[in-house]
Image (cartoon, rainbow, N blue to C red; front, side):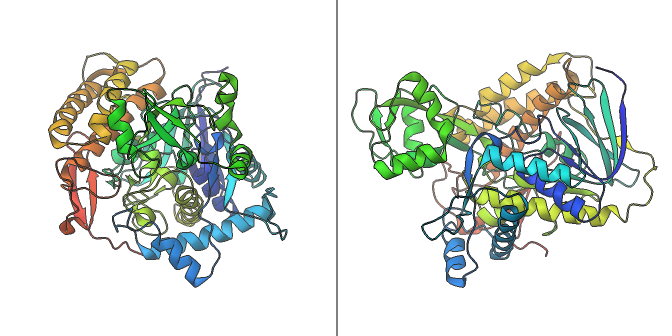
Length: 522
């Protein structure tokens, strides 16, 4: 252990080592850049993907098949997705998964004709091999080293970052030609498996240097989980029947359509499920595809295919929502020089519109956006010739209190959760409930700016980031005066053609919104 600060100079700094971060680091290193990757946890084992299996939006390059793949989710997303982005992601994902099969030697299952099935990966093995590939490419990894703030020069360009070395002790300060934020989304510490590191850190850091966000109204994702477990594998509940506590069938409940019925019922009574629509073949495939889903059942002596068990809904926010940092082009650059975003940190509206879900599109987006951001960051870094210009930390709330108050991080997180996790506030949305919640969050932000502190600076930054994310989310939810995608307003139930456009949101002390055209620069 040492408290000595670690000073590093590199071409590209990648923040976080999930799928998007590791693909970004790999592509930047392949392009000849010197790369440093910092991770809040242990790269290869932390994050939502490393804790589960996931599908991948891997589609053969057949025109009819690709057309069907793009059309299949457009209506769910409120027709806000962009076909150009979709096509690029399908191309990149197809090439990337094929490369991963060869370069990473991933043991994909095979069909009856011996051909590999590359439409899904086991998260633990996927991320283990991605860490291996990144290290072989020469990337330097700092584990247990959360990012605290970005560094900017006198012109406002991002030139590095400062973070905390939780195990080694002290801070690190990285001067870089470009920075890729792949810090994940924000699940508000809801307890969903693997999301404890997803607290919106990168989104806050980006906003502090002038970046803005898009799609934050589409951030009210809730996933089904057994009441006794943190595993959210909502796809498996497509085989489920749902019941009230008295054993009667809960009419209208479902995993894709009908989750609001579950949420409304949970406000007053327990809801139970049983995976009784799965036949013998499906049961075998489910156990093979997601072993950890069944661990908690096996330990509790529950057979989920024959026994009814209580369920809950866990908030996943922007992890399974689509909101995030707005991108300036398909290079995944932001409107701040030197700053790039990928994965759940960036908005996925471009390929999902206002609805996504778990795996599939998210996994494809992580691979594609990470690859594009890493390549572009490496190119940009070659133009950043002066690495010794003055750099200033941009972090505010949680790092540099503006007053003399003292507010603990755990108190802030608890208050944010009280306004974001309840189903009748965030999931079953109504303007009469959203406005008071947003006002409370505004007040909490002012208190956090004044005196949010913690013995661990990274914890204070998590609390600040959750507060900021919640405010942007509700600001956008109130501005979008309709129901579209996953954003459902009980007081505005219809889809309004005038809102067939994106909604940007930004600002720290005074959040703002503005509408944006669907087209994105190439």
